[in-house]
Image (tube, rainbow, N blue to C red; front, side):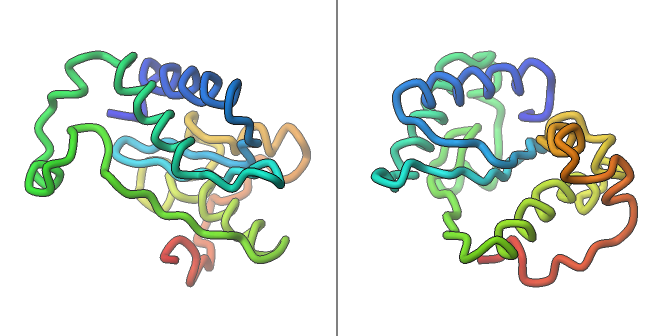
Length: 154
């Protein structure tokens, strides 16, 4: 549901809208059909992730295709959650540049890990192409298995 051109555009608008009043840098992101991962850098005087996620989810839900809000999701129904979003999110403070880099790799490799793409470059709903354009990664990065043990389970 999330990984379609239409939903990604609504999600982009939600991020832009929230960033206009609650600034943050979006360092890396991947949007998969049923979840997303991202890394943000918040202003030094504002560590409020929760309000930003709440505002993004609310904006997206109000502006997305109404059918998406009502699609049944048995796992969420038992927890009385909306069809779109789980109540919680996983926050992890990155310890250093190595931790940051490994989490960016985890994010960009996620479509390959879940079988949606054979290589990171193939997945359109990711910041990977932006990182390639900036010279951070070669275009063929993530075509084979990566050792990301211990990442993404915090």
